[in-house]
Image (cartoon, rainbow, N blue to C red):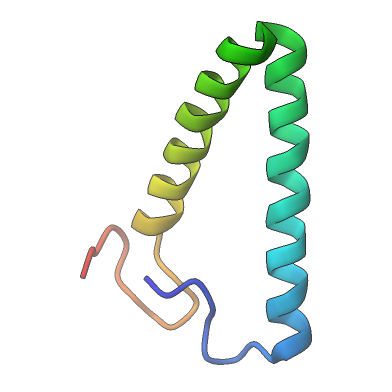
Length: 70
């Protein structure tokens, strides 16, 4: 699945990237606060890996069938 759909313009693409970066930094801050530096880094990597895997498997706006991995 493509990260951006065909219908998005440059402003929407920039906003999506900025929102993802801010969300990742917030998740990293919470992970460090709860688990310390080392545990927070490991928890962050596991969490982000899971989120990226879910986003890769979910269907996009371009009409892909659910769960299709190309």
